[in-house]
Length: 539
Image (cartoon, rainbow, N blue to C red; front, side, top):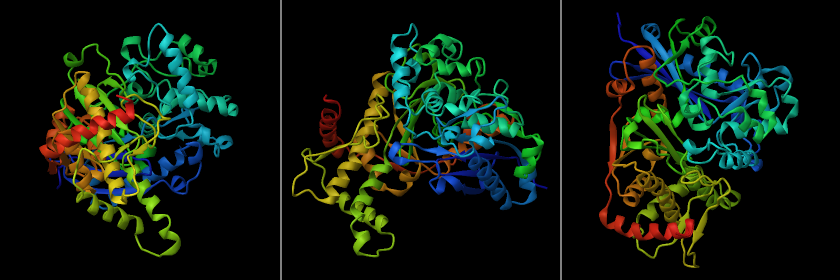
């Protein structure tokens, strides 16, 4: 009889949820299943022209059940019976207004079609005015509550979004009582009690996205929120003081959800966390190691010991939080608001006219493949054209959602492949700017670990990144680092391992590629990078 123990890592992404069943003894990935969000895939409740991106909570429920049951269907009963815990990661900040019972307002009949009653996806930028107000008050308050968030509260984060919903949808105020991050709601739902005052809150999400910090006893004081907008008084007394790291069990799988998922009742339900932070766990993050989650955007994660960072606060990043990545270490987050999205934009731009005059299967992929082939052949010189990568605003260093991209030094001789090369270099320059900010603030980066689709698909992008930054980049073998990291956290929450680091050592997938900087090209890129800084920052 199979005596192995298994855990399920659940990764709630932007478009879908993935369930991954992993053996705890050696990290073997037994099976997985992906379920697309049905309403989201139809574009429901979103308005890209307004930067409005909303997700219905029922999508999360339906896809969670489908993904877990689908993964279990590929296994025999001994695997199902051997599952001892599950945990998950979610995009963030993806919060929702709830009623007194902790029910997302969109799950009440009267608000079922109201986008402001739904989860507000991380990339929603409708709350710029609210974030501006929060930052303005914070900078003149006796305590700067944004200082552990890089000195800024983004329009992508909790308080700006919740205030925006209350302002633009006054009909929600009657039932609005509290708010929850996506990861908090899922752990509470599976544990059987969503009462706002009782649920376990994620240290990772609260610290990075909601201005929670132990220094001021949890959340900012009531007077601060009243100064921002008295509407925020709705939440007074309905939130939390304590938060918990992802090695902790938020509860046990309740009867209802054991039946929904086809699992044993009572297994451990871990505290959830932000997807990129958990992806860093799955990749093998350590001090002086930066994990880059590389997709449509990027998220950069590293850790440091308490005595390295001390009381210092790093400027212009997305936050530093005790235990947000690895318990017992300070976790740091930065990132780029657009990465693969820039390449996708360019291939769509070039493919636009052909769609009207030719029927070419897989047109955009063919365009990108040929652009890559030609760009790889272009020599790197100090006179090359320069681009700036802020096509979706700037996240780090120094958040500015209104910043825009640039293409410079264009001439009538400029080719499509030269522009593509410049765009790839611009994304690498943006990455280098993050590394240098971390280094300037006392966080040395010796190695980069890469996860995400681009790290597997484009040798050109990865080699350019290594050449520009001047640091070796190792590609993580697992294609499901976030789900794997959630599985590692589940193994600790279930008591299989005492620490996350031990779970990493036992369950790591290892690496399947490495990019070593070319010193000759790196020297030329040093010149081009100075030109990038001059164009982007006026330096």
